[in-house]
Image 1 (cartoon, rainbow, N blue to C red):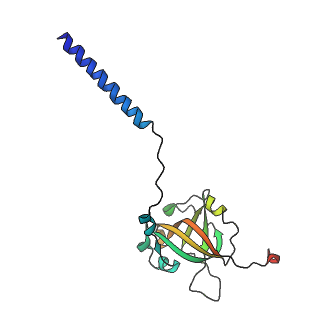
Image 2 (tube, rainbow, N blue to C red):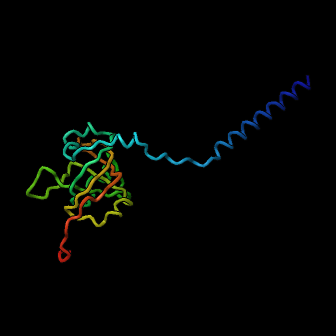
Length: 166
C-alpha cells in the first residue's frame, strides 16, 4: 500500500511539474504583433462622399470609408464628448468644407473627424483649401452625426498660398 501511495504522489508531482513547465513556456512567449491588413480587409473600404456619410451615418457605423475633401481647419470640436469620447490630450479634430456650397467656405461641422496627434503632426502644413483624401472608421453616430477616426490622410493637391499673407 505504501508503494502505491508513493507512486501516486510521485506521479502527481511529475504531472504538476510538466504542466507548470508547459504553462511557463507558453506564457513567456513575446506578444505577437497584429497582422498587417489583408487584401480582404483593404477591400472592405467604402469609397463615398462626406455628404453621403452625413445624410445616413448609421449606414456607415463601424465601417471604414474613403473620401476626398477640401481641408478647412484643425479644430477641437467634439473632443472629450462623453458619448463619443476622444481625449483632447491624444487627438485633434479637423473640419472639412461642405461640397454642396460653391460661393462660400462653409465647414461640414456635422462630421467629427479625429486624428491622433502623431498623425496630425505630419500634416501641420495643411492650409484651408488643400484637397485631401481621408481613410477613416466611423466609430459613433452620437447626436445622429458621424464621428470618425482618421486612419490615413493624403494631401492630393496643395493650394497656392500667398507667402505675404502669412
